[in-house]
Image (cartoon, rainbow, N blue to C red; front, side, top):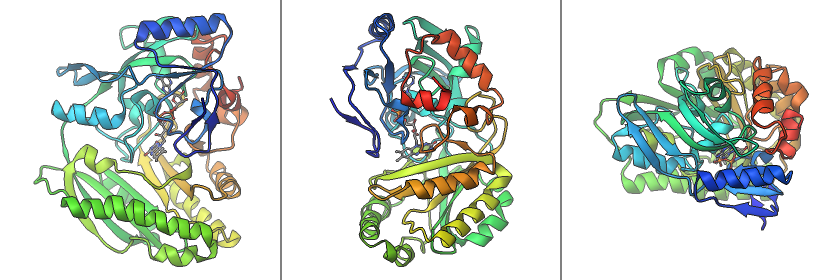
Amino acid sequence: MKWTNWAGNQVARPETVADPADEAALATLVRDAHIQGRAVRVVGSGHSFTGAAVSNDVMVRIGRLSGIRSVDRDAMTVTVGAGTPLWRLNELLHGEGLALPNLGDIAYQTVAGAISTSTHGTGVRLGGLATQVRGMRLVDGAGNLVTACPSENPDVLDVARVAVGALGVITEVTLSVVPTFLLRAVEAPMRLDRVLGSLPELVGENDHFEFFWVPHTGWALTKRNNRTDGPREPLPRFRGWFETTFMENVAFGAVCRAGRLVPSAIPKLAKALPSSGERTYSDFSHRVFASPRLVKFYEMEQAMPIDAAAPALTEIKAMVERKGYMLNFPVEVRFTAADDIPLSTANGRVSAYIAVHVYKGMQHEPFMRDVEDILRAHDARPHWGKIHFRGAEELSGLYPRWDDFMAMRDRLDPDRTFRNDYTRQVFGA
Ligand SMILES: Cc1cc2nc3c(=O)[nH]c(=O)nc-3n(C[C@H](O)[C@H](O)[C@H](O)COP(=O)(O)OP(=O)(O)OC[C@H]3O[C@@H](n4cnc5c(N)ncnc54)[C@H](O)[C@@H]3O)c2cc1C
């Protein structure tokens, strides 16, 4: 069987593909693979741009471990199958009057896949998805079931929340939740200079602030999402479809295709992007956070100390102008709180994330290497699921708790059952 990730830049030809029906079948599968010295990798929704989920030996899919197992309204937690896609979890939670406190900008990922690469949204007072994890169960490298929660193996829980699939196959996750809430979204263009000059206020005064610099222009599209008591005023159905699905995906896709054919036309096309209008609406949080992504692209995203965002973006802009790169995707900038998870990209520091995108099928590596060189000088940490060119030696110096992760890997998977080329690149084995 041939497998490709969402973007199509990762390909695998696994010898065995397994869809275990339950935890016991999964444990047997991993135990047998371990005895035979085979390599196992789990794949979620395949939305990572890196080779994190690539498996050419045993590929495990856990789509059958899906759905809500239990809801604890006193603790405000839900326990879910680790293969539950976020879009489905959002709908199920909504039915219970509950919601996740924050999300990224899509909801196609599985719960386990999302937390494993330190997936995040934006909001400087909130951490990434892995900070919402209160417990989990996983199958270790020898096929043993491990429960990790505050009262049992808390040291495993501490580390395994972000582990790039290298500590075990997560089967179940307990997440903290909040009552359903409404978000009021204000989306408006703003001069980039103004955004960069007032970043602390924009970031501090909004629950969820992000912006997109439109290359070849001095403009940024800003997004401010704040909690509101209502009323709920979603975009009318046709307008929502037209602006979100049609303009941001179909029409944008056509603009990208034109730019791929004639790259020198990109600066002119950039000015035709839907960047001029302002819109305001309010809806349930999961409908505001996440939207469809139909135009395919390659992405690099790296996390840096928050004060580095403005200088790093200014340097990227100057580099793009100097080198004449033709970019048809906006550059996205987001923010999160610090956390204490060893491999979280926001470990120990309030973070800004800069993400660059290149339309699928266009050359991306020289540009992304140039961006990485700039970000490296700002102590940036690459997103585990997005294109980067770093190896274990460099990464180990970027994470103060690197050794805690390595010690846990030696404990849960000493024989490296969960290995592939990507783990060799980023962990050295
Ligand atoms: C269009 C698009 C938009 C995106 N938006 C965002 C965003 O807003 N914010 C952000 O931070 N990221 C974003 N990403 C990146 C994405 O969130 C991550 O790459 C995420 O890991 C993908 O989840 P997945 O379920 O597809 O996992 P996969 O990509 O399939 O796997 C990711 C990793 O998780 C491991 N894994 C999967 N399941 C398990 C399991 N059960 N147990 C142990 N390990 C497991 C895999 O082995 C692999 O190492 C985006 C990606 C795309 C393509």
